[in-house]
Image (cartoon, rainbow, N blue to C red; front, top):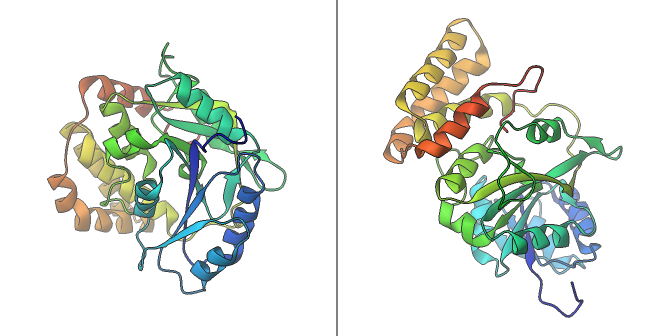
Length: 299
């Protein structure tokens, strides 16, 4: 792309009380040859995050949400973006040099492409994220008008969306808030005819803090079941509920907490219930069958 051409891709970052990690991510984004505009949504930080963004040499724009909006902060960033494409990063991730231009070329060449999941390399050793292999082995058949491999899942901090498609699908859903929120967005994009694919020619870097994130498993189990109630047939939602309730009855603490969270949010989920069209439900059922030895993450 010519240096004088207008940018095609904005990078959207959400953060909360992780100023030092965010500044490193902003350093990496500012060094990209594409020089993308960056929008940071501050989800109610109390560590002077907004001031650090304003002082950063990269010129990122900060949007102060005023409270923790979770994944909905990405929706806010997309609404503020003016480029046709939006790449998502977290405060511990960034894009490889040239990745944004490569992705924009794919979007330009494939008008039905709504979201592209990138190959994710983790940490200073650039290890392959296990999700890369899961996505690459997706059982969904290739589509002639889409690049890469069709999928119905992705890693939120390593994805690029067509802004129009993201807004058409409604962005991330308020009922889920945060944690395992990607599958529902992939469903909603596909339901509206947009393609969701994995293309390993586009690379993102992720440098998460070492160690487990407390409560993450609980939230992911909660949101997986809420996603079923929001979009899957009643039989699938009921079966998934029974499985989680059984795990809770067996004394699994995560399951019991997740089930309590589902019950609290279920009325809101039922108000927004909109089962998938038959063609997307068929794809979802293909993905319900885990490949032998594959990690338990959506493709």
